[in-house]
Length: 255
Image (cartoon, rainbow, N blue to C red; front, side):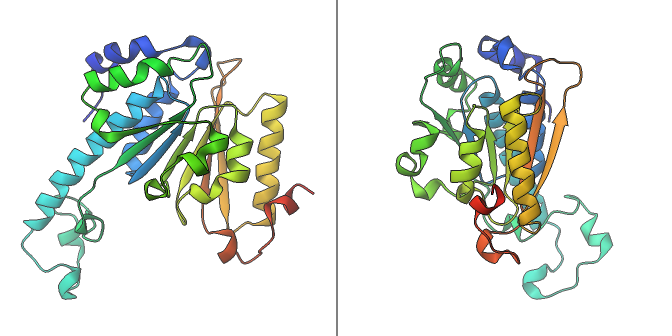
């Protein structure tokens, strides 16, 4: 399943050149399809929002088809303690996990925005989501990131996938890391590298990783052909601070 030209046409009004997400948006679509999150958080609505919603929509279709095909394989599953051999695993749907498909896949995308950025296309997102019939997957939350813990329903957390497309990456990393699924949740941050403030945030993340190597891992991707808005930093949660072998506070990493 791929994105059609009609999808790009429908989402084009949301594109703001200064935001630099023309290549990031389809990449996020692929990453969400790959990781298949149950709960996804986007901080800062805009051009990327329908790509994330569409990823969950397509993943839900895939999951339904896989679960149906898995049920018809017709041989014992782990529930009966039978051994799964390679021949069984490679039958359609290839490598499908019975444990994953034990419950229906019903993902949600929570989009957080306080509509304070004037040139953002955030206010136009919801009508386009509705026109694309993706609005059933989306829970909009009108709030700043600083108020997320009081404005967000705890039932919507934790998040397996977080996309922070707002200049509040340090705040999220310091104050909202508890919202990321433990273990295995990922958080992606836009355009940190190449800015004095952003480079300082990356250094802070790396210092935290050095202090707690078994807690998180970091990878940054750069668009070398661009002067601005040209990086994507992925942070994956390996273990919680409480379960870390080296338990120290986040504040210690900056000292």
